[in-house]
Structure formats: C-alpha cells, structure tokens
Image 1 (cartoon, one colour):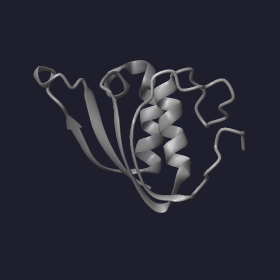
Image 2 (cartoon, one colour):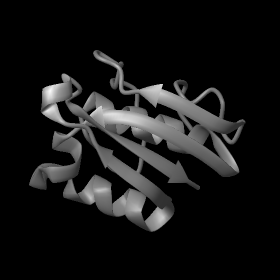
Image 3 (cartoon, one colour):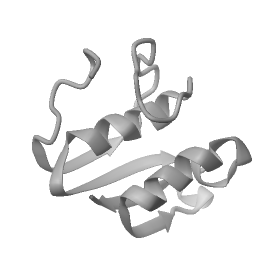
Image 4 (cartoon, one colour):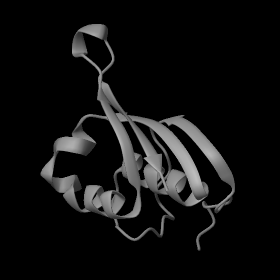
Length: 102
C-alpha cells in the first residue's frame, strides 16, 4: 500500500469530521481523486476492522454532485450505510453525517 495508510484494519470504531487540507499527494486508492474528503473517507474505510463502524461528517456536495458518483458507488457496494443524516442549514451545520458498517 502507500505510506499514508498506517493503520490498516486496526479500528473497531472511527468517529471523524472530514479534514480541511488533508494531504492527498501520495494516495493510492481504488478511485483516483484530488478531493481530500473522498481520500479521507477511503483512509477511514481501510482503517476499520472487518466489522468496524464509522461515523463521518462530510460536506453535502459529496452526496449530491455528479462528479463524486463513482466514489459513492464504491462505498455503497463495499459498506453497509446505516444512516445518512442531513443537518439543516439553519442550525449552522452544513454537513451530512454518515455511519458506515464495513
């Protein structure tokens, strides 16, 4: 693999918010993208144990924009998406929260 995946299949649970400026220069994931959020989700995905769970806050754009369709399809096939929560803009939270079960 590549040097940024340091903890493959190591965690039972990951709770995270997508980072701003996450380095994506050395990523070697199945879907090539320069989007730091998608690359971060891959990092979380590969860090989970086989029955691991993740809760990740991500920008709404990841779930609705056509350019991320391939990434969404990958995660839909590989993960059991338990819940997607759309937080209201009026609450000043402009993200989705997703829970992945691998």
